[in-house]
Length: 147
Image 1 (cartoon, rainbow, N blue to C red):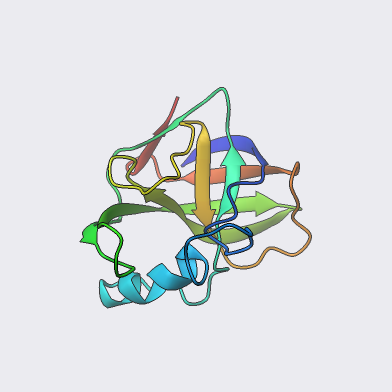
Image 2: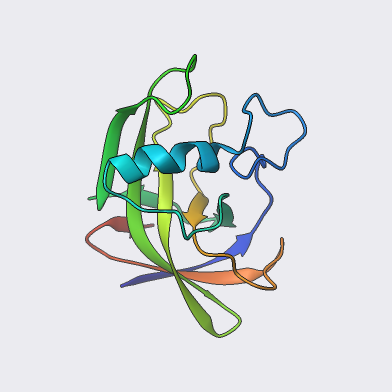
């Protein structure tokens, strides 16, 4: 397992639908979940938003994703996107929470490019977690490289 510490930070809040100026009728994750389910990845028990973890100065690189879904059209009127998912564990407050690294490929992602040191994670609701909290991400060495 690879292990990296990071700080939870606020993102665009488009994934969760909590931003006021989103072009989406619901958060992007909620809209994408049925499409990922149809492709074989069930995310219905996960919080419908991303946990954004800044691992600076390190960066995460996908080596071999568990799931890679190409050309997903998840909302009518928007272009297709490619998504990769890698297993991860979020350690917070001495508890482990199984999740997925959520990686919308930047070359296909609409309007919301992320810095290379920001890792987006899908996980169940984690009680008490807040912006500024330190977490540890555990990942599989075969799936991602942290450098």
